[in-house]
Amino acid sequence: MIRKSLSLLFAGALMGASAMSLVNGAGGATANAAGSETYRQLAIFGDIFERVRAQYVTEPEDQKLVESAINGMLSSLDPHSSYLNPDAAQDMRVQTRGEFGGLGIEVSMEDELVKVISPIEGTPAERAGVLAGDLIAEIDGTQVRGMTLADAVDMMRGAVDTPIELTIVRENVAEPIKLTIVRDIIKVRAVRHRVENDVGYLKINSFTEKTFDDLQAAIDDVKQQVPEEDLKGYVLDLRLNPGGLLDQAVSVTDTFLDRGEIVSTRGREPQNITRFDSRPGDSIDGKPLVILINGGSASASEIVAGALQDHRRATVVGSQSFGKGSVQTIIPLAENGALRLTTALYYTPSGTSIQGKGITPDISVDQPLPEEFQGQDVSRGESSLPGHIKGTEEDETGSGSVAYVPPDPEDDVQLKYALDLLRGNESDPAFPPNPDEAVLNQ
Image 1: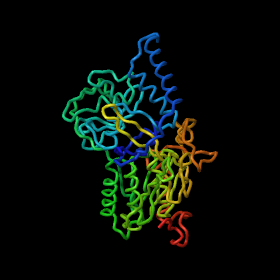
Image 2: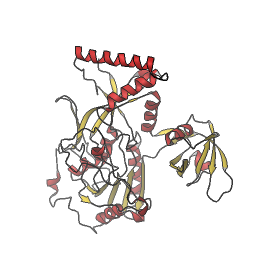
Image 3: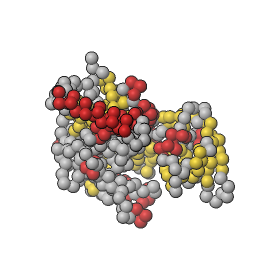
């Protein structure tokens, strides 16, 4: 019997993302029966495990020993295979759904406190008066100092309709502010959009279960704001997008592609090949499309950019992408969490693997770093991860590039170039004079 599993494109711990989609039979291949030597090695492991339990200077926790042993085995394979304990597996499911019980704030760490980047519009945090720049010093009376950001986020998330008290330090306010906020369902916006005069700007933050629907709504809104005869085209911003669900990457690509292959995945066995093809219909009615990528564009982002680039449906602008071209399968382990295992590599329509190499933009445009980032390592790449799977196309330069996008669009050199390109102020070397030359795998 083939068991059901969860298949995903995972950008890795460095990228801070996980995602999944239901498939049948992924990871269902039967391994060869273990030989006597394998059982001998397992006996050695059992002997060592018992000696550690019995003789280590302090009594260890059996669960931690076993989890560490499992993760040690999986991490020796590649950077993206790992064991998810029940809490981690649940957290991954929450991330991929794109909604959770919480307050509705985007946060980071600053001076050992949780800093509010911005409250999300219409959420409990905004209604309670939380402001961008606020520093959270206590959560339900517990000091934030000493916590990791993940620990703090876990404390702030929780069941809907339950209260939480935050102690906030605010600039130019002498005394800390105490706010009691009631948690609600927070729906994370997978797609943000706006109109840049005569261009539609579409920013995909991650590929969750909501991405395709959010993208369609964004395109519809752009069309309502700008008459068709005035609309020059669209910018699809995939910078700093760590990846996510494979089915969402396919659907997003299909949004702009009228026909042809989108991506194929190839597993351990030669016959284990799955192809995903587009369906008729282009949601932006053939309007020009420019895709922005950088060193923070990984996995599902690279599937979208690679497919639309191969079909010459879009011009890719920016810098080399991350180069994460492997597919992970999430195998549920009942109440024991889940196993995340690399089971395939994916290939663009032209048959190219980007593993360890990334997507090379049609037009290379570097984003200058502000002075405060000078000298810091803000570049990313799969090829820099220890133990990464070697790609067939990987070269000596590897993958990845600077992963920085300025918060102010006025400072965004890559975006400005994309807008100029759509308005005809820059030449486009990506499109051949004869459109028929641009058709692949039809």
